[in-house]
Amino acid sequence: MIPVGVSGGILLAAFSATTFGLSGPLATGLLGNGWSPGAIVLARIAIAAIALAPFTVVALRGKWHLLRSQAIQILLYGVLAVAGAQFCYFSAVATMDVAPALLIEYTAPAAVVAWLWITKGQRPSRLTVIGAVLAAAGLVLVLDLISGADLAWSGVAWAFAAMIGATAYFLISAETGSGLPPLALAGAGLVVGAVTLGVLAATGLLPMRANTDPTAYAFGSLPWWAPLLLLGVVTAAISYATGVAAIRLLGSRVASFVALLEVVAAVLFAWLLVDQLPGLAQLAGGILVIAGVVAVRLGDRDIA
Image 1 (cartoon, one colour):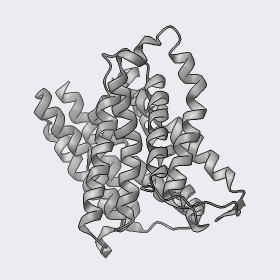
Image 2 (image 1 turned 90 degrees about the vertical axis):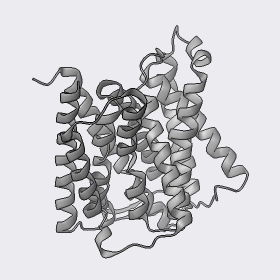
Image 3 (image 1 turned 120 degrees about the vertical axis):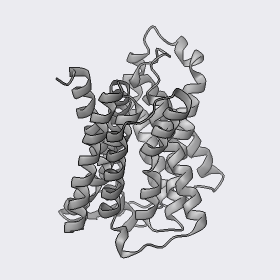
């Protein structure tokens, strides 16, 4: 029987991945209107920080001293897991195709497995390795890499840097010994991330372009602020908060593989919002990703 905490963690992780997957299709409409990726990501993280602020305050009631004692954890989470992953990913796609950049970033689960093996002696089981291979094959199909992709060494380097940020997200979120509530880590980390991205924007490293034209999607148009609110509240505030909670329940290894469902969700949302119909290969890839996640979960249970 699967423990309630584990089943709840899987549901939370799947929900977090699904809401994260909505971000790309939503941003596509704004990008088509001339918004720069930097302006979108800064607005998204800033709105998320504001949306989570009241819940962060409640979570920290009587525990404000944790902000000081766990300052390094919060700073690393905000700089690496939030701002770093976002900035490096968008820097990558500025010089290479989106699909290979995503594939490189989503080698984070393999990096998590390697880190736990090297630092904690948690050798992956055979099922975990099989699951990783299945998930990787599924990603190749979902991202349609077989048809060829444009690669640039600078873009590859930025994508690997984004992978480091994503790996930090899983590893830092899994730390339970600090006593910092999941909501507090997510909320405080988003504030740090928003400030970091703001500094990058102020220095010109994060180009900022925006306008107030209506945003077109497959179902019609929305005012410019509507997708921004959805990006900030749904695909960032809710995604990060539920993601941290899920990682605390599942551990970084299993949660990182469940997070691969984000790519599958992104393909489905792209179909619904921007009329990008997934092909049979992408659907088959989604099935492989899910099979890989199941195998990793079973393998993790064997290790435990």
